[in-house]
Image 1: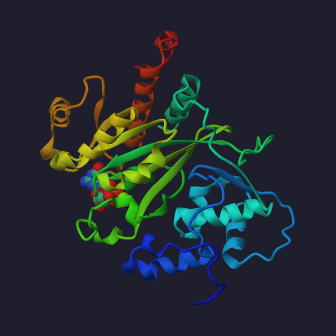
Image 2: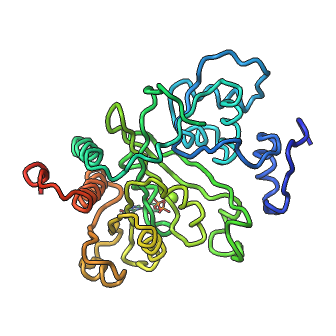
Image 3: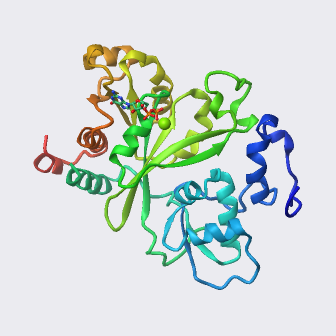
Amino acid sequence: MPGTPPRGTPDDEHWFDDAAGKLIRPYTVSGGRTEPTMRMELLSMVMATGRPVHNQLGPDHSMALGLCAEATTVAEIAARLRLPAVVTKILLCDLVDCGAVDTRAPDPLADPTNPAVLETILNALQRRL
Amino acid sequence: MPYKEGSEFFSTALKLLIAGGFGVGKTTFVGTVSEIAPLRTEEILTTASIGTDDLSGVERKSTTTVAMDFGRITISSEYVLYLFGTPGQERFWFMWDELSNGAIGAVVLADTRRLEDCFAAVDFFESRGIDFLVAVNEFDPDYRYEPGDVRGALDLKPEIPVIFCDARDRKSATGVLISLIKYLLETHVDSPSLENGAPA
Ligand SMILES: Nc1nc2c(ncn2[C@@H]2O[C@H](COP(=O)(O)OP(=O)(O)O)[C@@H](O)[C@H]2O)c(=O)[nH]1
Ligand SMILES: [Mg+2]
């Protein structure tokens, strides 16, 4: 096993045995954790704060941080890291925890069916025709 | 806790779901309307996610992760619209809970040669109260159906729009999104302000 031993309690039952090859890397990347430390959604926004990070970041954390230079979504970071969404969320939560990244979850109170928002979308789409 | 005051540099991400059976053209559709090449994200399937279903069936390639393709369209400085192509089978519904939470609406893509492939998506959106329309992706003009036939086969409520499209064509696919937003406006707006604004 390369790298640090897993922190937390791995729940091996949780994963498919025949998937070991594919799952070992994400599992190692996330330090054995299987859940993010805070609620993060695919469309949560993340952005680097520019604040200096005191602990040494591993390569995966550094890469994730590098992708946050501009405000972007968790989904896009996951896609660019080619890591499963849950693993990406764990990495990003670590970066939030150490102050390197700010995040904003989708506003749970925002009404996606707000007519003004729908009109804005409609106009933007019509301009694309 | 994840909320950050004064974070006006964050735009608001809105989402639409593009659902339907395997091979119906979801990825194609997302790529056609997106301003970026479609990106792919994966969710890990856990035993808990799939109940008693055994995975060694239809989709061998996705025994460990489920891929979702997505794209985006910048709406304004304030809003960005994300389109997620989501596999329609019932055993992926665990993913849909997060995906559909806060979704504006959905497009169910249908292939008239295999209409039954979109039953699960229709059921899901109906049961969660997510507004959707059905867009028939026309692969083979010889299989041309009338909208009424599709409506009947899918047992759709009369108000749900059924339209035809070519997922490879930007105007056609963008037109599907426009139809969806117009339908949502009709559904959610009682105000008459639309009558003189929106083109028919
Ligand atoms: N003839 C035709 N082929 C299409 C159309 N839309 C998609 N395809 C093709 O159908 C195949 C499956 O499409 P894909 O977007 O990958 O389906 P998905 O599994 O729903 O994501 C691809 O080879 C596409 O090029 C269409 O409107 N007409
Ligand atoms: Mg696809």
